[in-house]
Structures are given as structure tokens and as C-alpha cells.
Image (tube, rainbow, N blue to C red; front, side, top):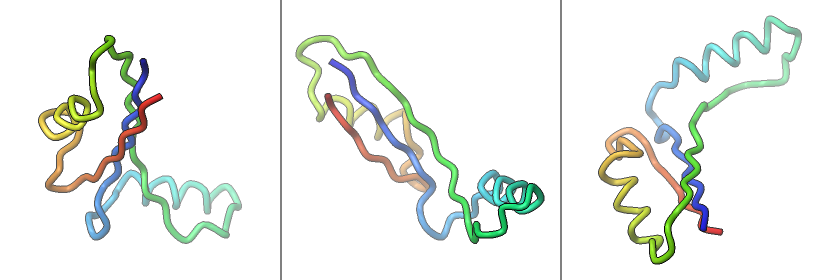
Length: 76
């Protein structure tokens, strides 16, 4: 079974990488982009019996810094 974890900075947390991407897009002529938030996707190949609750614990303990990041989990 596979799980996909999406991790993003919370609203209100400065995103210098996102701002750099927005600036670079503008420099390339893509003027319609007002803001960029950059995150990460983590794909996990899970052993049988691993639950969504287990993946949530992984996120809380290691995969996301829950002080400044939010996350969502897809199992499938």
C-alpha cells in the first residue's frame, strides 16, 4: 500500500523559496503569478497493516514540523 503526504508551510509563515520562484517566473515573463507557496510531497511504500493513524504519527514526529507546517495524508 502507498501513502502520499503533502507538507506545506502554514499561512502567515514566510516562504522565501516560494517568493524566489514567484520572482523567477516574473523574470521569465509570467506576470500573472501573484504568489507562490512551495511545499513537499513524501511518498511512502507501506507494509500491510500500517494504518493512516500510523502515517499521521510519522508526520507528527518526523515528516512535518507542525509548528510551521501543515500536512495532509492520502492512502491508496
